[in-house]
Length: 502
Length: 117
Image 1 (cartoon, each protein chain N blue to C red):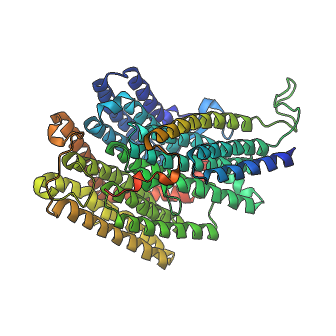
Image 2 (image 1 turned 120 degrees about the vertical axis):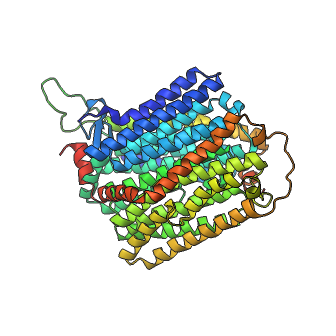
Image 3 (image 1 turned 60 degrees about the vertical axis):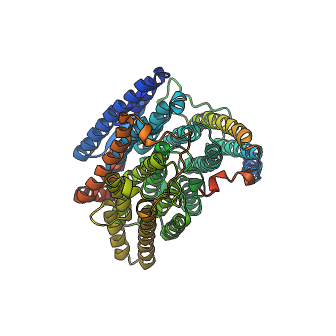
């Protein structure tokens, strides 16, 4: 019954963070430990996924307390896959940080906090206890607060105020929902809640609790109309930090939505209708927002919102194939969004600006690098056979099967908007003739960097691009995995059996 | 007792949301603190309040008696208090930094993140 290796990805990140804290002032040693630690973490997560894929859902009872009384950790295919993706993104960002994070930030403990953030993310994916999920969320947000403000530039601080306020509000709403849920059922174990909530007679209160969860997770995953903090803050920190935020922080909210609304609350017609409307408007507002932005990182921030809409659409349609589409899109999106923020960081290192109006002529100067950057950009658009295409295909299939015409229209509109935005960005940054930009003194340009740093930045982008290509060309394997996950989500009996042992 | 707690919780939530909607940063933090306290009291209330029945299993028994004070909500509240204490400490330092850097505590004047490049 007890499988302690489930928490190994979490414990190991904590271990790395502690080791990093002991080498506080030695920045080169920190970089080395961080990269090696991320590599080992990647290996551990891969082994966990293989184990889960082979032997089915694994559960661990912390302290040997029998479920539902103790805290449970569960690794099903969904959790294990997301932990693996977190480890991949973590490795890429760690390597990218070696090249791009300034020494002043490393001195204030950048690397330990980065690993604590990844620990929080892995913990949130693996926990099977709703209050424990709240605690992991708090670990994630406190680490992200520090990463967001480290360095203390004016824009960073202002962005952080909006980010901190909305995230604290989301936490309070989440806590309120947990309190009501505990009052209703007297349980916190998610598998046990799945049984208990179905038996509660006061359906009105159950629906209110479900809406509170929807709002709490909705703020965290930046869905319409709760997303305003995201474009106000994600473009302010250094690109490596934007990358880990853009890739993973909103996605943990999506994970929580997918988990809670398939396991604990089975959405009725009203709730799927609310989620569908939210998904459509998220796609629309995110896309339109990205359309008018001129700052490259703000464009990507709005595109995060737009594509969160696709994942929410899968939940709104609520059929196995649509949820598989949402999961596939989640996998693709984590890799691509992390990569895109790193791409914008690399362009900044060359040119010294994020403004699409000022940038230009990148293709003429760096043709090979531009082709490398084209991979994540075109993957995002979803030109077949690249990775973005397959998730949308499954989503549209699911929408057709449940004859949800409006949803199909919005998914296609969202794809079209993405295509238009990326085409505009490509023309503005890569093709357009660029004027000579004034050199800024406080920026260390790419040519002035040491060769190792140059290789670290390009290498991490190439690494994630290869993974994106892998997802696109090996789509059959990922699709089979997504289908397994979707079936497990739609029918949680194996999950409940693995946790409660009945 | 329950009715009193219900009213207090409602007041704390309402006051918290009201304070968060004000423009001053300090009021924003006070609002967050009030909301957090409201949520903690809510957990306390929903754990069913009983008097003088500690959750201790007697030597002669194998399980708890019929009525007992549920210890779980107390553990939850303790965790939530510690977490919110840390977060609030961070938020207070943050607004102090913001006041120093931006030289205003009016949220409406914090527009640097919306500026076009």
